[in-house]
Amino acid sequence: MSEDKPHQNLAIIGHVDHGKSTLVGRLLFETGSVPEHVIEQHREEAEEKGKGGFEFAYVMDNLAEERERGVTIDIAHQEFDTDKYYFTIVDCPGHRDFVKNMITGASQADNAVLVVAADDGVAPQTREHVFLARTLGINELIIGVNKMDVVDYSEDSYKEVKEEVGNLLNQVRFNSDDATYVPISAFEGDNIAERSDNTSWYDGPTLLEALNDLPEVEPPTDAPLRLPIQDVYTISGIGTVPVGRVETGTLDVGANVSFQPSDVSGEVKTVEMHHEEVPKAEPGDNVGFNVRGVGKDDIRRGDVCGPADDPPKVAETFQAQVVVMQHPSVITAGYTPVFHAHTAQVACTVESIDQKLDPASGEVAEENPDFIKSGDAAIVTIRPQKPLSIEPSGEIPELGSFAIRDMGQTIAAGKVLEVNER
Image (cartoon, rainbow, N blue to C red; front, side, top):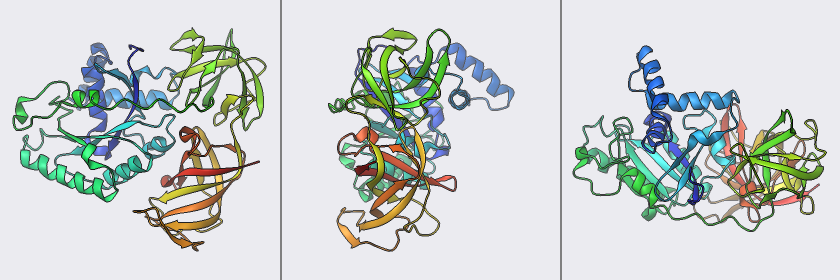
């Protein structure tokens, strides 16, 4: 990995059966990020199970499982280089908590590839993911019209899907002029790294060229250090090692830091990245670090590390703008689902529904409504049931968004407007 290229977080979104895993496997393979022998091994396994050809999807599923089991801290597997950028793929596709992870992602994606199968077109999950991408402020979409091999590389099928997706983007007010469409087959490799003879009617970029053409990401704001903790390990010879991703600011050896809401602090002794000690870490870096005087039981996943003299905010209550994606009935004051914000998961009560908004324009449609339901956007006041560190998205957007989960599904997405500190 050449660290000197600009970095981008890339979400791969779209309906689960439309070939996301295969596409990710193919991208990693074509860019030399997964060694040939690993692919071979999966190919053999896949063939034994009578699933020949699924080796790319297989590679991804195995990585996802490894992550589930917590086998590895090193997430280099999901990184790949193009000529211009090095990309980190945000969340393994096909992951059942994809929507939640996309919202609270240990990383917000900068841009996204939307995968839509040529033989199926826009599916319910396609809508949901596009809607989220819009809500989360993803800037540019590349649309991979996948499975072109299944429709015999038909230009008409491609055009139909393109039109269908264009309409969807307009509905959610995504700036569809910026969208790039590429007809691909992740399975066969058409138009991924090399232009395909099967689509002689197409004269646009390959998928890797389209990724190369993405605009550079705006550098993070000059916000103070915020580093949500993903896990806390005990490593012999070092001691307690919290692990997480720097969202904003820098983590410097020698700095005094504070963990909230656990409310402990100390001096950073070492910072390690890719198994090497480094003097400091910057936004986007996944690190393990050790803090003098902070033990394994003092801090936990969901804490946020920041400067001791400008510690992360802890909310008594907060006001947020939410969009309800799916809920079987209605949401009223008193509803207490689980909020997923950065790496924290905390039950929170909807204390009041302050305003209902017109989702298209964002104008206030109703003051103090009795309830909100699927498809509604609203301003609400939330009370966490136990301490939660969260920031207004206007100040630190990286720590200002959350997903609301209940009954095994993502109910709503939102962003924090203001925090009433405890």
